[in-house]
Length: 232
Image (cartoon, rainbow, N blue to C red):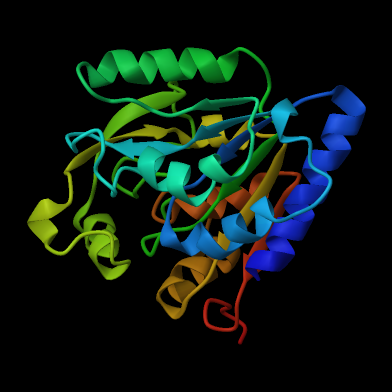
């Protein structure tokens, strides 16, 4: 699944570089994306110097070098392995509200070509959990409080040892900001995601399952494995 997604993403990157000379991409940071990212760095024929990379969420309150920080995880998993033209991590230290506004401005400078995302066990995309998800959010980037299901997922994913260690707040790209990406690739492995995938594909399009809105994007591809597929 990860290799299949990486193959398609690589082809999209090559095609857009050939047609417009540069690519702007937003990446998700989670263990569910590891196989795809590992495969993507090995894909041939990509002029990474013409790629500008962003990511979609970050915890508030962790030390700058904490391995659980999504920017740190992505740097180890992906950024250090490819010669990107530019890499823009979310840096929430100091004034998170200012960081959110600055990141929104960076994103808005030019269109986003590609978004690589996943789906959480509660149906979240980025850190847009059901209690804070807004399909008509007026902001591009905002501060959110993480719900208990989302925080527990971070433990189940092996990112934290204890519930109380998981930060309660984060910066996230909003749902409208993610949907502005021209091409969306969504990689969702594992049996714990099966219900969320089912709701996203077959349930009503409601913020009870934020990922359900992805069905309305005109250029969206979903990658599942046998465990996450609701039709298995």
